[in-house]
Length: 196
Image 1 (cartoon, rainbow, N blue to C red):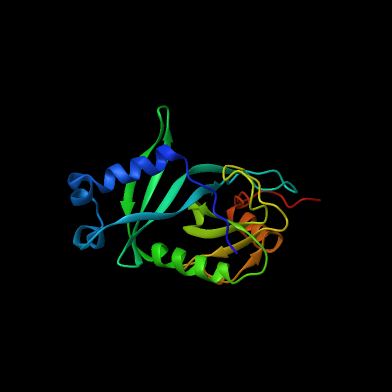
Image 2: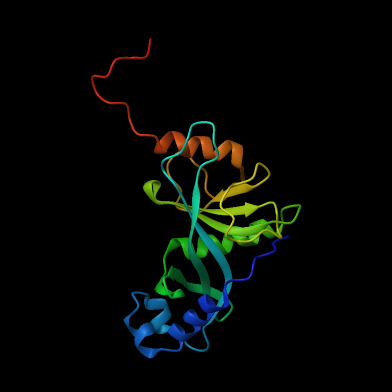
């Protein structure tokens, strides 16, 4: 069972204002949004966290809250998404987009509903690997801004996932994060001596 945390009211208002603006919708690089017939509604708000590259070995990787994402529904299905970002003036609309991660997010959320136990859904972005995962936080009452993955959390990589990582398969945090940390580690310097 999923228990989403509520999005900040200003983030939702900024998306509703953008959806109500013919200019914002017309100028969006989202053909599905421009061609949509009928009402558009922002749903399923998810906090978007970004995994930090630099970390201390043996410590939990650092993440930071980067924004909130809303799936834009039309006719019973998600056709696009809207991202918001934190500015000095508060939460504001960033951009609309479409592509494989929209349907992959919707699919992963449906899969997660069938998992035992309550989870708080979030997204975890790993920009250096061109990867996005559904982060199922095991503390459903936690603030969506908490940034440290817990041992009981699950990660569900969205399609397309990097080679060697199965999309739409739930991973324990302890199984997936070491793989990501290894891939994100800087390569050894050429010509450097091997440790003694």
